[in-house]
Image (cartoon, rainbow, N blue to C red; front, side):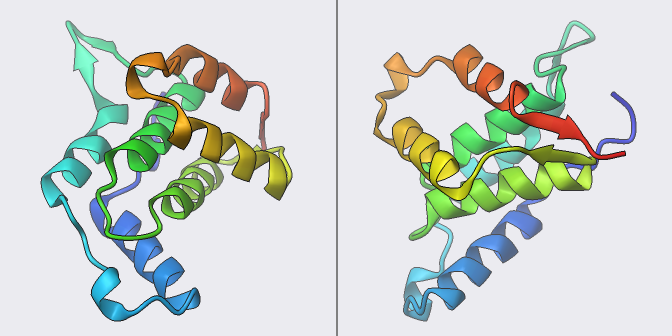
Length: 137
């Protein structure tokens, strides 16, 4: 996959700050709890091993960011909302739409958040996204 527009830490931080500001959360809650974890998770979609992409499809790249923002709690507040907006941003910047309604996306986000890490099936999440995305161009 060439010419993919990836999220950066600065973009995800800006998304989180906007969410926190819109929701009237006190400024002290608009902070990064773990900047190293944020940098690490942002790099995941680009990872390779022995010349092979670990996340070769758009769905896999989107899913790993979505999951890790939800599960790593890199922000003091609004991690799930930040994950949702980051997912949508990444897909839209790469000419994809996620064809779900707000409730479906909220419910799925909460399901991921509530599921223990050792019970989380990444392939199911990738498939869920893959079945619901469409190319816009």
